[in-house]
Amino acid sequence: EGKNSAAASVSFPVSIGGVYESVKRWHRVHTDLCTGIPNDTKEKLRQLSESSVWVPTSRQYWSESARGLGMVDSPNGGIYFTKNPTDALAEYNAKKDVANEDGQGRDGAPAAPATANADDGIANKELVLCSDKTEVSPYVFLLMSQVQPTTFTEADRFVARSKGPIGFAGFECRHCSGHAGLGKYFPSSAKNMCTNSTSQNIHSHLLKCRRVPQVVKAELDELKRGGRSTDANLTNGWRRRFFDKVWMRLHGY
View 1: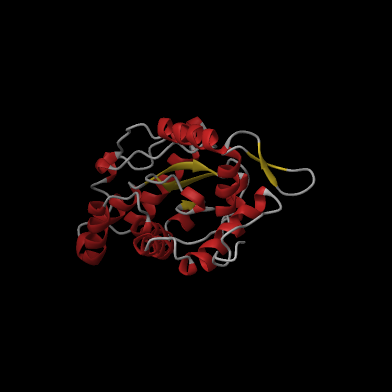
View 2 (view 1 turned 45 degrees about the vertical axis):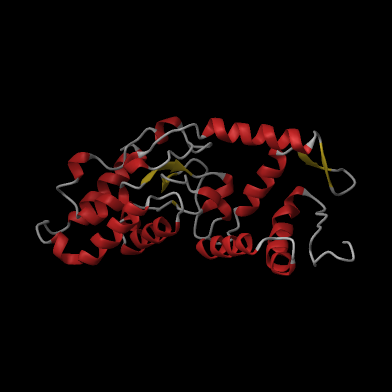
């Protein structure tokens, strides 16, 4: 690092797998000290860091992004580019633009890219149907309308509490497709899926997810505050019956 450079301005990871830790250190150590970063940029970084969380599968994201930019591990240690970094970045961004090409999801939300490892049969399943609307609370109906089917992959093993065989069916936030491991759920049974804890985990993710429209977040909060008053006309056991249906749709029973 130069004499006038703030700490952690330069990193030399020994492998692509070390990029994740280098970025964390840069963010933690360098950004506040660097006089070259505009204050509004520092504030934006601070806000974004508070609205998200570093999770183990972030390693996968940084490793895949590094490879997408043309980086490879050197046999003697370190990283080198297989192509011009500027050209690689342009190519990488072009691929992302194509993947996200002006799709619109329900409620006007940008359509999230399909989960790369999801089985086509799983991906095309609908977990919540219009006919469910009269049989569940408005809150649960809206909540579960924000998720889509996915399947368990090797990368999901790094996510806390996520264990299961490769290909096991689960669901993820339909707005971000469970980006970086957040917003992915793999209940082991219909009973586990039905718990208030699972619903609360989904709710918490949706409020933090930057891809979820504010109107959806506001409606979820309003319906949740309504509590039991919105469930008054439902028959006993409605919650378990609904999640049994979701489980059967998800697992093809």
